[in-house]
Length: 391
Length: 131
Image 1 (cartoon, each protein chain N blue to C red):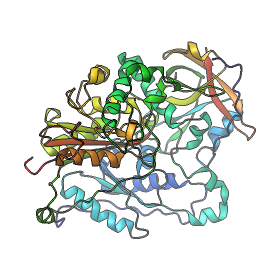
Image 2 (image 1 turned 120 degrees about the vertical axis):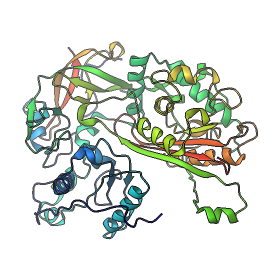
Image 3 (image 1 turned 90 degrees about the vertical axis):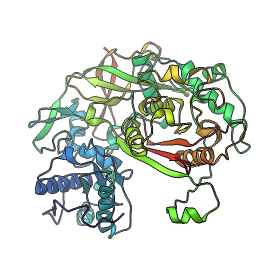
Image 4 (image 1 turned 180 degrees about the vertical axis):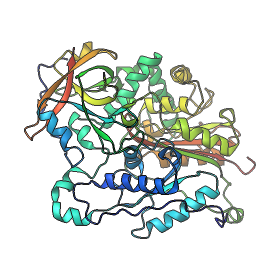
């Protein structure tokens, strides 16, 4: 797709300072954003895409998106190519706009090497993370307790139980028994899960994923290349992405960014939840799966507990086979990042190459979903919908 | 599962230009949120540009120290501790610890009040106990 004539530059801003004493790096990014918006005559809420490079503090663009209070971002790119990054970002933004993914893309670059030199370690020790880790780290957040608080709130609002969460682990274990590479292949019961030790209430040890090394890779090619290859074609039908954060104190831990990434992916793919034969759902913890399934619309918000119960996620048994490789809960969560393996198993299912015991018959359309960061604070959610040649 | 006082060493926050006024105030026993004089909203954590309307007409607003538990989790181990989000009477929900109480009796919606713990580094951590 050509970007010729498909996008325009509407606003620019150069920061007047040349020595930013007393200003932090994230503050500079925010001031630059404000200046460019004013130049364009747009408001902060108009921004639906954010681009930054390695100069932006925090995790990709997520921390800056939270810091600036950007609540409508549906396209993120933190491609890092040094000083040329921002030229490249203009191109990426134009491509994304031409493809209809966004309408108002913000690109920021900020630095303070001169002030760093004068102020030394005071800045370095305090300001690198705009999410102001000072407001969080002293209270001893861990990955587990930051997800556990989501589970606690979900239980409070919707009556979700530990037994219902346990069904998610049970389903994963039923699949893992057939995966010779899975770290944990033993089939577990609901009782096994709820009787395993509490790590951070209300989550038990078996509510947590495994810790493993390794990884994965994917090669994406153009249609004309695919035609020349012998492997079954796996078509990318649609995708969506969205950050979610603490909304400056308007905290709601009962949903994830899947609430926004999912509908966009479904719309682009032109399919509905009923068309999905198999789903890879990011499973760092059981609660991650439960909230994600609700947010993707596989069931009503708050009804996830009932939806996952009684083996509904087990291939050959339930209505929505999930994580047929055993998922992160039993098989693999390499480098503490489970998104890659979610894509891999969805591809196996579309190709018909999952283990025969868990292969979904006629799996023409599958979904893979990733959750990066912390469900209990800030995250980047991503959904992709894949199909076979005829989809 | 109760505690008289937090047993672990109180960790000091990382402080920068933006957050120094907030942390200096904690040493005086004051908890602040951000307040925007343009859109009128309170927010947390404080930052120079309002995260709701981008105005720079922002300031710190001292809180009463009263709130309710939005959610919590007891992390197990030799010395269990409770992390929580507390919704302040002023509006924002903030990350904190619940201390000096019976963790087994905690509940979402429970009223809590502010207690400070000195970090020994010119700041104090705002934590909460049952009201």
